[in-house]
Length: 434
Image (tube, rainbow, N blue to C red; front, side, top):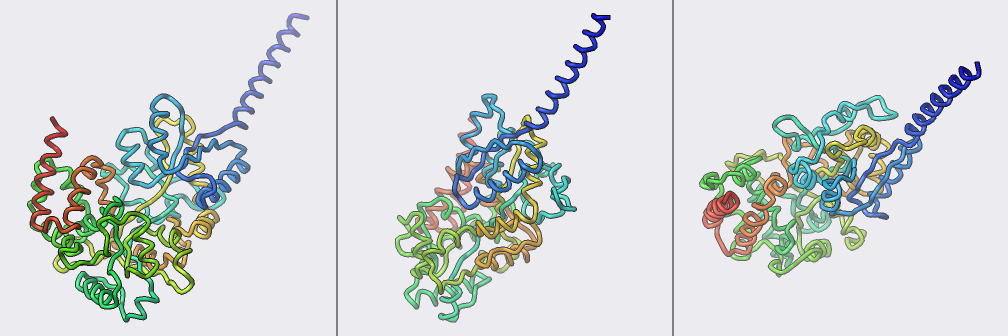
């Protein structure tokens, strides 16, 4: 009788310990998140508040490393050495080039079907499709769920343009007319610095998008034969780029050969240049210098007659979450992704960071109203640099950017540009494959 009582007591204690252990695991559920934002940034503050709310609502822990912009580079060796990192965030190009291309990212398609906590909608219901459509691969896989939505445009001061009687141009001819009026008033048409890669790459890929269409640059970069660049439309792209140069129609600001960030954007906002091409983060970076009478306006890269690209198309540049392959806590990380897409956080994002949200029905900041209208009216979108920075990073660095410099400096003309794109692409792939 005594032994039987001891046995029953032991079993009861074991069951109790198992139940207690299970409860503790549930209570201590957590995931690890490495973020591109740094402590104290407006974006970090919005995410930090959402993380705190998520932890309290679901009794979980989020282990955050505010790693900064090089987060993808920083986490890869740690992750590949066996450390568990469940989720990160960055731009679509950084994620696809740094994680997806290396096979260390998990698909995020299932997140689109997840319910947004505290709301009667799914993630797919609330997201603007244009915010991620360009990042859906041919097999249907998606590796990013955006929470920030960027595009790039020509920026101008509406007050200045009104004073000079200039309307925002749509076509290349109108763009040239605008430039002449600005020159007549001793204002450089375009603020620009060729030493900064992000500036240098904008015009070549946008001209290709307008003249040849979406994916033309990406496809040509991937062709070892170089035959794609024999298409005469590439010479036309080169001609447009040459016209920007000091040897062409001299549209770029004085000293652009040596100017580096942030000089071009400051020259523009101070009225020394009439326009500046950049992403929708630029009002945040320049608003203190802009002054009370400065009114942000935006127009898309000009269109061309008899061109094959969609004249309404604009760039889509999402920043979003990506869960890493075989992450131990992938389900919880994805639950937070859905949680952060609640309307209240989307509104906080706009109000605090002055950026656009991919959440439908949430207005853009006033400074980005023109850019948002361009996105709303676009029939199609395309990736930053047509995706070559992520898909062909070595070609982008060794062929695309150097030749962009040559033609924008006026060192080669349109015909030479097309021919060098062909020959340098052939050399690149020969060297890479040997």
